[in-house]
Image (cartoon, rainbow over all chains, first blue to last red; front, side):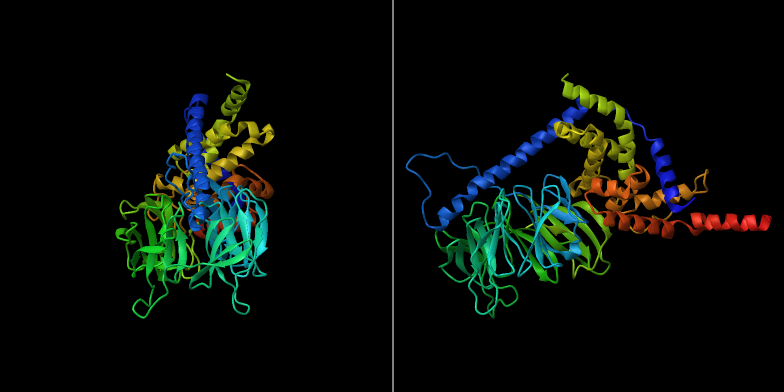
Length: 376
Length: 180
């Protein structure tokens, strides 16, 4: 008996004794109804986000956006939670999975558009790949830098193309639109700091956000003080920003929250970088560290006061990537850099009740790859 | 009952026993298998009108089962079973019918990463071809080949030497030599 026959025989032997009371049609239909209700709930949340996204440019231009009539208060904006790419499978916030035939070693970022398409920034090859909602590869675009920037509503994604023009792929649109390049000295390429909507991007020189890019080109962005935009709240009313590092705050620089309509910084602290808004815009997440590894994940309220911290146990155990699973929970990729073992944890925003989603298992060197890539 | 529901019920009655066995091999746990099957059949029911080719329903539901079983969120509430390269120590491997070889093989299958395990179940239990397995899992044939190869290598490495097929085959050969 060879190995293959042995496997077949043993699997059949194990399976043949498996018996269970037969499932009735009613029980299957009941489960189907529950799934249908959950899907409708998710779709409604995405639709609310898409509707709210159109408010953002109005706010940016300083207009009131209101009308003479009395309008009902809009529902609080909520962005989709994070998806996680692991071992060739993308798990969406609702638990649905999509096979994506990529190795995380080649992936720098992943995003999921509201139409279900999956956008992957690849390190090898240096490209942006667009996969269909079923995980089939639709297109690959050569890029100048393997970085993507998603809009807060996940209705658009942008990147800098090989010819230094900017491409914006909008949800529901087959091909990316081409916008003018970001003016930079020499052959340098600028950076896309935020996608307000498919027609309005915040761009800069990787240190400071300097302009608003539209199809007409770049218009200077004037703000109360220089900073780089890191993230935009789901409603577009607040920007998370990073100030240029100073001698006093050399390591991370200072972070803050900027109100674009009032043109003022409304909160600031100098011990935490890269603040990312929660899906409901009420909290922010920060990771501090180097080489794809972080000591802890910390959350803050809108006054930038700490709301909670999750620090994995063990001297050599660190956070690799983290994102918002939903408005009140984080999803955190954890790794032991000494043993190369990995796990995925879901934890409350106050750092409580960590729940192991994927128990510890073998993986690769966390300094170079992330076995769990959390979507932008 | 509508024709659609009657049609689905007929499929349910005919195929659920077999699909439960596949679910068991994917999960390694009876309760998880039953839950996985119910969820997968519910999703099949929702998509029933779209599955025009009734000949491919098994393939469709297998894909749902594998994807559902691979869902990261699903794992949180499951029992704390996970893939590892290490065979748990102290596990009895003796099985009267084959001196423990079957139990050793099952240990290896249970510790394979989920995707590799799905490849093994589809190839060696469902007897799908490499192309059919690739299609079901949404991966390339090359990936199926490499996953299969790694699973067989793990089987060879982790099956106790004295129980391995090649070792036993070698012994039989030498026994035959001696008899001659």
